[in-house]
Structure formats: structure tokens, C-alpha cells
Length: 271
Image (cartoon, rainbow, N blue to C red; front, side, top):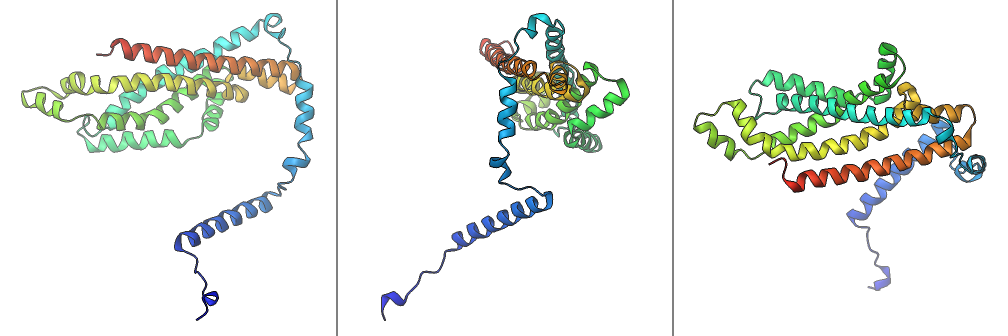
């Protein structure tokens, strides 16, 4: 038989790739049709972004020493992130010990606390801040409370996993000689998990600093609110200057948190 009459069937792996690509394409096209979105607008309507960028240049850096409220807004944002990380982190640690299997013997308590942490995790931050704005009013306090709730939801389950993954042999050893559950937590579990808690605290501060800026747009106060007001009154040069300040603030906070985390862990303060 002539070899030219043979043909190669597509492999199973190739068929899977074609199927996945086809499904994704159908979903993307269907979503664009449903939303009335034309992908070519990314190229044909981009001049609006260019025009906006031109109106923002050069940035009005004189705003920083002519408007004294900017400095206090930055301090407000940093305070929101710090207090949200501290209070939220402490509550997340306490709830994590109540939901971990090796620190809480009562299953009902573990299930209830674990379900609460899951619910706090899935609630959007924008929904939370709307509730707090209605409850306590506009300002940094509402933003700080939102960050506390977000920190508990984000790190509560993470801390639970860290506690449950500690080595069990040392705990069993001191339990065998009569140590109580509190002593096991104090002398065995806590020294193992404390470095991870410290590391995640600095990460939560970086995360909350970015979140605090975004929450300010929705009534949380701080430099995010200043940026929102500058854009709302069409002061685009002031807005670009605030954007540069926000980028600098985030970079400096990240460098500082990395330095402090490495310093604390390297000098053995937690041992």
C-alpha cells in the first residue's frame, strides 16, 4: 500500500488542547456579546487614555507643600494599614488557635470558628466598608475596621494551617510528663509558629497599605480619598502627583517591612 494513503490521527493530548481552547473561545466571545463589548475598542478608543495622560503631565508636585492635608492623609493611610494589621493579626491568631485541631479539642468550636473565618474571607472588602460607613460614618475609622475584618478572613485560615502543621513529637513528649494544653501551646507550638506569624504580619501590612488606598476612594479616608477628590474635580495634575506619592509610599513600606522582617528573624529575637 502506498504510504501516502496513510494519515496520522490526532493524539489525545492534542484533542484536549483543542477542546479547552474552543471552550475558552466560546466563553470569551459569548461574554463579549452579552456585555456588548467590542475588543477592537482597545485599539480604536485608546486615544482617550492618551488624552487623559497628556492632561496629567506635568504632575503638580507643589501640592505637597501647599496643601497641608496631604501629609496628614498619608499618615492616616499608614495608620489604617498598621492598626488593621495589628488588631486583625492578633484576632486572626486567637481564632486560629480555636480552629486548629491540635490546640482546640472541642470539634463544635473548631467547626464554628472555621466557618466564621471562611465567611469573613469570602465577603468582599467593598461590601464591608459600605456597612461600616453606614455604621460609623465616613473616615479612617471605617477603613481601619474594614482592614481588620479583611485581615482576619485572609490570615485566619492560613494561621490555622500553620498551627496544625507543627511537629507533634515535642508536644507528645511534654504531654507525657504532665504538661497541660496551655503549656504545650506556650512552649512547643508557639515557638514553631511565631516566625511565620511575624513574616505574615509584615506581608499583611504591605497588603493592607494597598487596600487602604483603594478603600479611601469609597469613603475610607486617607490619601486614597485625596486622589479620588482630585480626579473628581478634574485636577489631573494633582492626581498624577498623588499617584507618584502612592507608588513611592508602597515601595518604601515594602523595603522597610522586608528589612525589619529579615532583621527580626536573623537576630533570633523569637527564639
